[in-house]
Amino acid sequence: MTARDTITAIATPPGSGGVGIIRISGSRAREIGETITAGKLPARQVLFRRFFDEYDQALDHAICFYCPAPQSFTGEDVVELQAHGGPVLLDMLLERICALGGRLAHAGEFSQRAFLNNKLDLTQAEATADLIDAGSRAAAKAAMRSLRGEFSSRINELVENVIDLRVFIESALDFTEEEIDFLADAKIGERLLKYQKQLVAILEQAEQGRILNEGLSLVLAGLPNAGKSSLLNYLAGYEAAIVTDIPGTTRDVLHEQISLKGIPLRVRDTAGLRVSDNPVEQAGIKRAWQEIERADTVLLLVDATLGLTAADRAIIEQLGSSNYRLVYSKTDLLAGDSQRHSDASYISVHNGEGLDELIDRITGQMVDYNQDDQTILARRRHVDALERAYQGLIQASQVFETSGSAELVAEDLRLVQQYLNEITGEFSSEDLLGAIFSRFCIGK
Image (cartoon, rainbow, N blue to C red):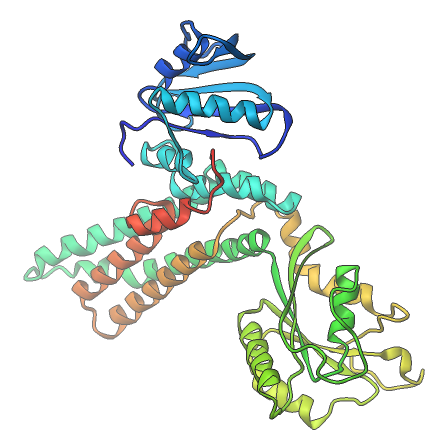
């Protein structure tokens, strides 16, 4: 991509509609727009014009307007043609624009130009796509907060603090032979701890935002015939999985995207966890453990009629510190006076017992996020960068406490600053930018 390219794309969804918007951006946008409309396009005025082909025959009559650089979304000259939304008509207009010197835009290229022209930082550009793809009201509101720059401002504030500390430490390196102990007087350790707390608060908000963005990852696990597929069908609202009395019916991971109380969930039904000589079942069990390792929450289902068996206990031991909840299924088959544990859930998909309470437990924390006007929408790469920055601050604290080496602390802080700048795009490789913007829709 070069700055001289003039790009164009349809900015409305595919298919027929009342209006179809074509966007043109670049140095020749106004020239192309004036050729198609056979008239001058004054800045920032909505006009009703005819659109002409190369033979001066009218293709359409509709609305157009011109926004000059830098006061446009991309920071370049931008023309929009708001034609009637027929696919054939829009294709004819695109062909005419390309014949006049434009080219079809790549996915996300308009937003990428806005970023490169300093109209948006990287988190705001991503928030634009996230706002379009928001799967719930909470996600849309959180994306809008990120688009307004609230996430960026928190990152930038922390970056400024890190820079201030770096400047002081690196300045102190010039006075190593002086008797004044600059580092001791500045309370470096206290400042590092303060920045760690500041980063943890941002990280918690970002993790909440990531879950709102991607959806809560929920894995159903347990022994064969523990009721996993029945629970999946109940949550999905239809027969998503085959349910039989034969243990081991589910051999692969079943994926369902559902919404509970406005919270997006990515539910995974997995193969029964048991020792097996069947290579197909072994492959399914391996995939099940992979899903468990990646999950935000695991529901470990246990057949209530059998109780917690040795095989169940072996699974619990292997789960270790994973975020799991014990769920006893098939409670409709239990005697009324059966003993129950307060730290577990008891459900029956046949009579509905305990299912509302289980759903409340699954969504409870996320419902709190839903009501939190401070939550910002984030992506996994943001969380990863924040976690690396946090580890960098911990490393800097440990180095300062054990060795007092200003050089090593300064280097750790340099890396922390780099990780944080990856989030907003102050430091980004071309490969990273390409990967991010390629996921945007065409015309955005």
